[in-house]
Amino acid sequence: MPIGKPQFDTRPGVTAAATARLWIVAMICGFQYWLLAASMEAVHAGNRGIALPAFLGSLFCLALAVGLVLTGELGAYNVAKELRDQRTPPREP
Image (cartoon, rainbow, N blue to C red; front, top):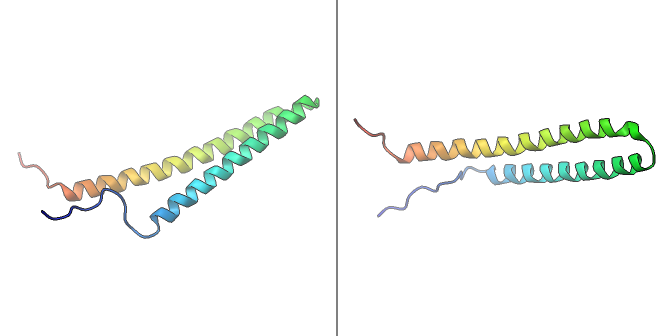
């Protein structure tokens, strides 16, 4: 019995791109944590005007992180779908 094709993407650079996305999302999460800590410290010190800009900045960071994760997941899904379509012959009615 022949060995089948792998069910994952084997092109060069795919692992590096996924690792880069992971590191960028981790840095964004670290920045969000710092933003939360700095804004909480400012609010407790009496500066209430910082809350809305910090919230908007945090939402922007969340959108960036979700976008990066979805881009990677959708790309992996599309490649797996192409591999699956190449492997299985079309059914005849």
